[in-house]
Amino acid sequence: MAAATMTTSAATGGLDRQAIERIVREVVAAQGSQQPQAGQGAVGSRPEDLVVSISARHVHLCDKDVETLFGAGHTLTPMKDLYQDGFFAAEETVMILGPRRRTLPTVRVLGPTRSFSQVELAFTDSISLGLDIPIRHSGKIEGTPGCVLVGPRGVVELNEGVIRAARHVHMNLSCCEAYGVENGDMMKLRVEAAGNTVVFEDLLVRADETSKLEVHIDTDEGNACNLDQATHVELLKQADDECACSR
Amino acid sequence: MAAATMTTSAATGGLDRQAIERIVREVVAAQGSQQPQAGQGAVGSRPEDLVVSISARHVHLCDKDVETLFGAGHTLTPMKDLYQDGFFAAEETVMILGPRRRTLPTVRVLGPTRSFSQVELAFTDSISLGLDIPIRHSGKIEGTPGCVLVGPRGVVELNEGVIRAARHVHMNLSCCEAYGVENGDMMKLRVEAAGNTVVFEDLLVRADETSKLEVHIDTDEGNACNLDQATHVELLKQADDECACSR
Image (cartoon, rainbow over all chains, first blue to last red; front, side):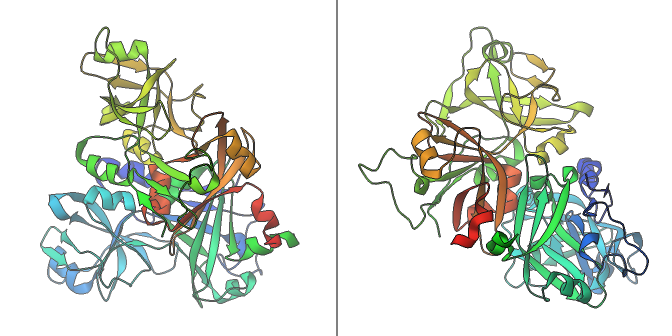
């Protein structure tokens, strides 16, 4: 059994909050329960440090929308640091209003702010909201549906920006080298659980100098693979299956 | 793009009903859009006739519980035939009451009746209900959580029987031969969609003389792989990846 800890990378409110938080956690794959050793590189820089995080529904906001929703001069208040340095779940939440007056009452804002606002939902969320959303990589929001955001001080109408975030893996360049991949490549995530193993293909590598090794999947994917019961998680190159005979 | 049709193999009520029904559908894999030809066997008997169905949350009832919930002498009224001959979604629905008074208000009953009652939920359902449910194959309910079923004429308390149904594939024996598998074997289902391909391992083969070829996954799995956007679905033997080099 892999060491598993639970963290909240984004939280939602209402009746489901406790439940959603329960499934928002990380599985530390450890691959044989190895822990990072001094001198072997920073945490999250090596394949054996693989962390898989479930991102619950959340919102990214631009500065202007923060002020509209929460009041002039308002800035986000960090509540909890995320695994990637510099990112946080904010104290602030918004209500999302969809077509036919359906709502998601309490959706967490993540910080820091961005140049434009974006809403990331699982398919289950979008169905309950009545929106037909595409799978997109963060920032690629052209032509996506919009929604209305409701905060304590105001309302923002987004003309676009509601997406299902495509799964991806953050890593730094030394980790890329270890896996033999580059920024923009696709990998596979295999989540092994007794009687319920799932392989997620099309996992985009988002690499830079400093990111920690971390896979982001959403709540639907986390529920489908029963991540909290996973005994092993593994990143594979997209084509690895095709040369598996060399094992 | 594979030919895709939408059917309701089990329906739920309340605000989500329309939405849930939307995602309860079949993808006919067609593998090159081949349609069954006369003289090539019955529909659903060959790999190219693969149907993948999403089972929304539903309840199986024993005769005694039908009478308790719907009145003495009551029998289920078929509303819609399921893909497998002899099985149907009933007109009847029940409310499921979980711990902490959380409910799923309108859960479809499937027929015909069985020797004991069983509730099949996706993880997302179980989280909203406040139940921690195991993944089990149908009928294997020893040690699983119970719940309360509420019908128009009475209430049934189940001491056990709430499960997440393990994914499986129905097929007949000639289809087993075509795939080179036997009843009880495990297979993989690969659901190919642009940028979102998923492989579900641990798919139990449930074979008999008469079943049509049909995979059953639940709503979480269907949402995770975005089944209604799938361009191809394929059944593989559990070990197929390991000899993929022979392609």
